[in-house]
Length: 424
Image (cartoon, rainbow, N blue to C red):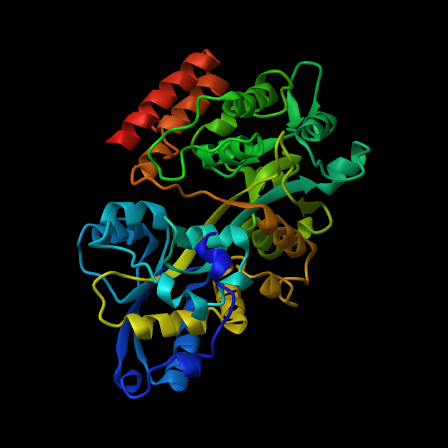
């Protein structure tokens, strides 16, 4: 039985506080900036003021720029200066780096105060490592299908694809090119600018996992990887519905989609729904989102996430947990999702009016049911999965799909290189 299944009840915030000492406490809390920075600051300031008014605990808030965030948390995991609690990510990697001395602090003994059973199961994987709980997942980044409804109607399609086979058929039906091969509209694109994130959901949908649960064994030399890479290869070279230039840096899919030059994107960021509403209002009525299409095994969607947790070295664990408890309430999670623009991590919040007033919002709520975390239990995962030439997974994709090198040989090489990184 996992710790998540044992977390069944929630106590009130007032009952959880130690009166007297809490009234004099002060904690340091760091977050990164999200969306409109003024709106984000107003959101955080409002929540922290409400927390202080309710508990008497003062909170000093600092913002860590995203450009410095990775190095900041890497430094913390290696013994650098740390706040009491913070907005964090890549729990598995930073915990493995910090071990029992630095970085994220397990708070499993306090978990019954955080109402964790009310969060999406997929989101909880981002706060659980080696059977320990480290905090509350507060933001999500889920991917879904984005498609041109006008192109689908023109092609005689009744709706979005729900399987890989249907995806191929839909992409071919919506693809438009002349007899010389000059393309007016590409039938398909894989996703965002991160090429490695294209492969991840396809590999999971084929039944694969990149490594063992403890992060010690690479597990990519298998049929699932061959199926995923074959799907990618064939979309480019056999069905010819994907622009091979999309694998190169600087290829921007969303503007091309809005211009009608791409009909279907298989793994689009949920934030693109918000961007389409705000930046391309004239495109209203020409596009829609849908949950990920299922592969041979399932319909896993790429999911990124962040969590609020406690750092080793703090003497204010009780006070930090009280802050997490306050921020785990539905009202707080809703405010955080509104202020940041990220999807919420609770089904109840995703059913709120704010997350139900547009069709694409309702879709991403469904997609969250199939969320598969993109983090993995290895300190070297960021190097393995970097979407740059030289990255192990990137080179595997580029060599087999773009350059059409021998797939078996490339997978074997990637398996060996990845295992070497995990061993190191």
